[in-house]
Length: 451
Ligand SMILES: Cc1ncc(COP(=O)(O)O)c(C=O)c1O
Image 1 (cartoon, protein in one colour):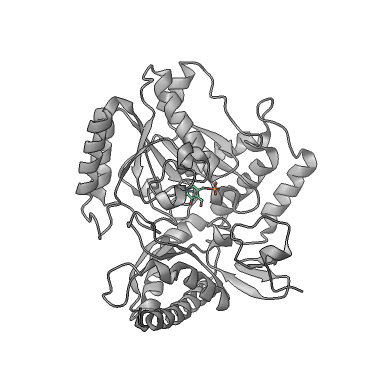
Image 2 (cartoon, rainbow, N blue to C red):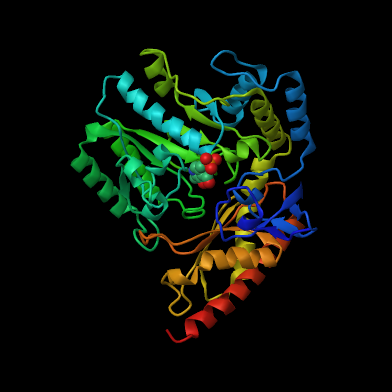
């Protein structure tokens, strides 16, 4: 049996043609097993911060199977279903009582794309047709569709698709490196509002707590207060991309619940289906809904799988389990300790500058050991080195490469399942510390070689 599948061995069009892909056969809790019997400890909920309950959860599988038996598919253009209705009710009761409505979609990009369309429609319905532009922090990822790709300010991600992307406006991230107080970001926001004309801005779009782009980072409080004031003054909407942070990942149902500002629109995704079905959603406030309710009464664009019965049944089972098992509260209580344990395990590492954490979303920022501050040279490809070395240690983590915009260096994201046991979390921390030790040795060796 092959250890890993290379592009020349398959008819699948892989993401990276030079990367051999381990062939996963089974998942059980936080363990992944390949066809050739290797086991990986999954510290990233399937790699994309999705499988928040872990793999192989019978209650969710049964809910999907029972729904498929009753009816697997119909189009929500024509019909609705009990699972879709109940999921909407349940989410608005437990996850986002401050919101009024939810539109279901099939994933994170679709959720953000829908959020963007809804923000635009809100203004058009109210007669403010000039409002289309979005201001967003540059160091972000909102999806791979053309609409959502345009929202990021990461040129490296966008190329070569830039000709298709609308020109939105960006501010720098308020990290300790660039803008610890958040004041520069507010000044940039004012300048952009001024330049573009506040009447052209439809929304401010951001991840309240960043995922892969700046793991577990959130702007300082002063920034949120300043943003709120500007919303009041200039009438744009605030859209939160909670595709990763929603559904309890940071210890509250939404990250918005930890931030001193109330968004108008919130996109969720990953944890809602927990890896058992592709489903995302877009919440909006009563005010946003009212604009359409009193206007054209149509928000028609959608996708074939929006609110499909099996996906909705899965979402419902996921919410039920999160509630029954108190997993969101568990993440809130256990998260800070987990961050401290990770930091303690990495203490002394000369390539680790910062360990950030919010609930079960953790980020480790790597730096050049020669000064403990600069980003590592891009050509070292430290992010790939970390991920590959982690796999050798039987651990799945997800790292991000530096971007040409210079806002972030190599960083690793850990996002374990909320249901991980203490022993499993300890093993993840140990394996990651061992990974970083190896990577540090390799990096120092590479840096000591003559240029
Ligand atoms: C913050 C954020 N937004 C949006 C997306 C896009 O979600 P999807 O890949 O489900 O389309 C992702 C995916 O990683 C994400 O991390």
